[in-house]
Length: 493
Image (cartoon, rainbow, N blue to C red; front, side, top):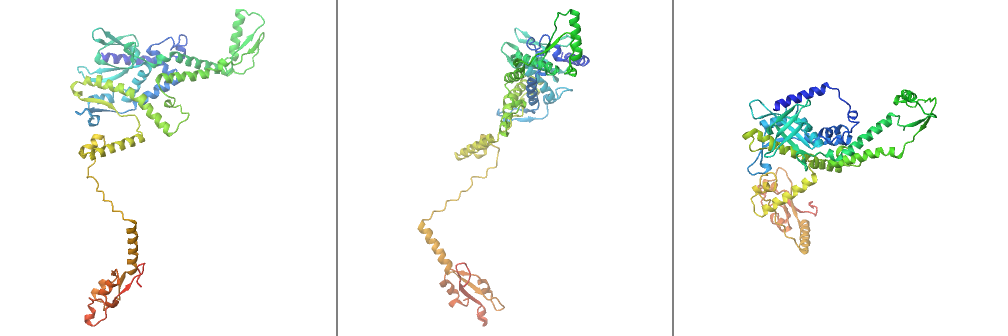
């Protein structure tokens, strides 16, 4: 069935390429696109008719399509951090390349456009002949898919209507639907566009009025007054002649020549000047329907780095993540089961698009470190504390040794110590030698030696000269050593 549908899609593409496109404004100028038409096609056409709506849908669909996806094998613990990444699988290959003509990014962007404009997205699954494993996925316009209800099973299948009117039945396993729940219809989605149809009509009509105003040289119209009643032929001739000479921008400001009439100007009224304000109010209504701010679609009035980061985080949390969650649910609960036992225990998940907040990360890290320290102090095993609080594993080398605090001396002890040190420095003695060929080994080793006081110095050097262990004296030589008193700065006297 899906192969038949893909052929119809290809045929529809060829038909669209062969036909000459009709301008949007002229195609529905007579009966109104939004106010009178509430179908899915009118909702999708609204994107190219109202600039604010285009900016919103384009921004949300692009942001959703740029997020990366991974396939994981669930852990027995049930914790996300314990999962194992799967890098090779048929489901992963299909998701990264849904079909031969469309990468995942374009597939997701197209699906998100349908979702934002009509409240629902439809994926058609194609299977290889004789196999039950999905081969391709295609995003299909929501206005061409119709659910077939069943009173016993809730849903029997789907019907795809091709551009030439051919109706193709599809089985449940051939279609995946993503939708914003509709409180009035459990089979279809609910579009934000439906809540702003009058506003979209107003914006389009205001744009057409402004366009016509500038085509008329940015001047209001006027009146041609004639003294007598004109016949039908005279009226037609006057109008044709006037249009030929003055209609269009190229004929602006030409001198008008009237044979039997007078031109009367019409000034711009306050009502005419309110069209600009009206279009601004319409843009606000569109943003309200989608719950999106001016900053999110590039309308920066007063912004700095901090507010820009906050706006980026808000957009990811409030706009991108909800759309990713719907896609994730469709992948895990509808697509993966189509692969049978080969997909058991697997799940798709997206990479978090929310940018990290440095302040929050720092506070979280501090809180986790404090929790780890508290658990360690309470006696828990250090090897398991880090994983329990969500910190990376770090080799545990034991608690650091804290030196015992030095005893605090009293004031009197401190002063006495300083005085003793000062007196000691004043009475210190140092050994001086005359180093020549008669100097013995023992005396050379004594050079520069210090003594605390005179008594100690004179014990080794009686009278202040001659080392008691001098070897030169044995051979009849005079000792080359003596001790001298050193001043406060450590210099010998």
